[in-house]
Length: 481
Image 1 (cartoon, one colour):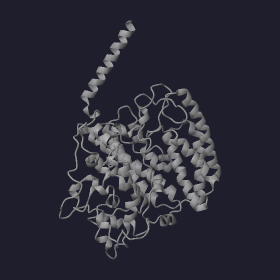
Image 2: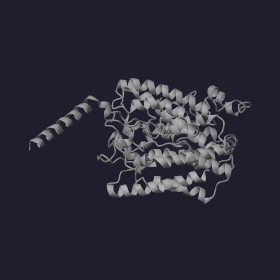
Image 3: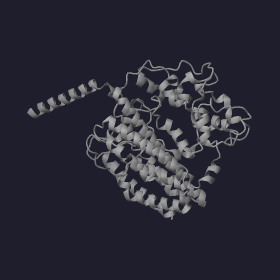
């Protein structure tokens, strides 16, 4: 009886301590921000607007020619008919989106399709109509100016003689036409939405938004571009860079890690004025969201010991596989990752380390994007080594590590298929096997792997999956020789 009383008192003390902590630290609670709604869907009459809308690109003499989709001159046709960005605004009408705004702002929340936080990424121009012309409309979702920059500076200029001959750096610096032909520049543009924009607070997915129902951002550039309906000459890029698949994966890893570091620096600065710190969306979800048993973590194949109490690894998806892409870039993040994994990282120290890491990653990204291509033999050797190393350590890897390694190997596979004509089913089979094994870790209706309530069955399933995975990786390594 005495022990029960002691236990009850201890529990009450712990509950009171948590209550005091939350009361003293309101930044830990969902922010008391009011829902900001767009007053309309179209821009306003301005003397010199920045955003001019897709109507400025749809002339039949420009980007709306009658050619087939994905042909030069038919870029608008391709975007309008096939580009998933075209439907970004429509997504805000889904039941999931409506439920998210209710979770964030209460039962009387306005529509997601007019909520500023949603429009910042699901529409062009950060959802800000104050800089847009009357021809601009949010209904066009993520359109031309989202990726190429506000048209005010370059629309007229890019139709004049001599503009085409300018180098991409001059076009960007003097006219604001973003250099998306450069892989590092393209990756940075993609990361500004798909990872987050440190300079635009609303263009960020934080823990509040995830808790409300938004998917965690699991962006990876090479797989995204492989599925993307390109409106540029991919064959020209492949001729310039025969190792385009690997180069794209590598550029994406660096750009995502840089964006993540800059987000951390921005959030550390905001912590001084009450911003949430650390921002849980940056840390390993499964450090907290797992079964409360000593050997139960949400790893897909083999159970690993718990991390030290109070430690949650930083950016396990966006920066967790950087060592595969570039050792120097990986080392630039080591100090920041160690600081952010501490139980209570000081924001001032974290900000300094994050700024240093961001600058180092930016420099490295620029230097690697234009480097000499790998030979087919070098790519084949890299693929075989990566498959062998992954097979040797697969049992102790998390789902995220395995998924990123699969995506890296898939990028190399695409290069070798094109360079060596490897289109036979035997070459493809082990990749399909590995992909299905990884996909199988997602229960129906979930965005990420989840622990099984039947621990015995889960353990048997993991062992079976591990053997199948090792077999697939062995086949990949063998086929790459």
